[in-house]
Amino acid sequence: MKQLTKTKAQLQSLGNPFIGIELHAGMKVFGKVDRFTQYKIYVKDKHGDIIDVPRRIIK
Image 1 (tube, rainbow, N blue to C red):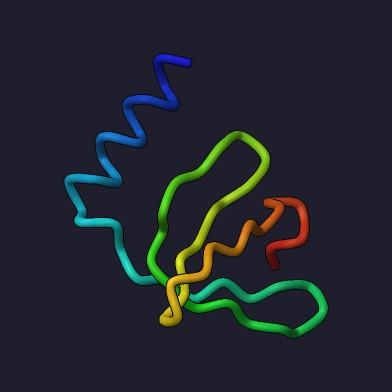
Image 2: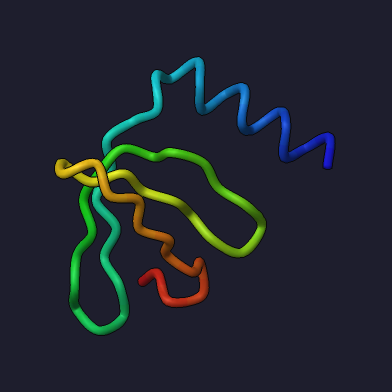
């Protein structure tokens, strides 16, 4: 857990970067990184919706 809090702090110091994630199906998800866990990345899109992307389907 210590490693996860360290990376959360690093994420906040970057100002929650805007990223684009390409999935295996060819779909792309764009947004700001809200938070992440060991298995999922939560991305906030331009409408303010939070999308959870499982890490195993990221290309």
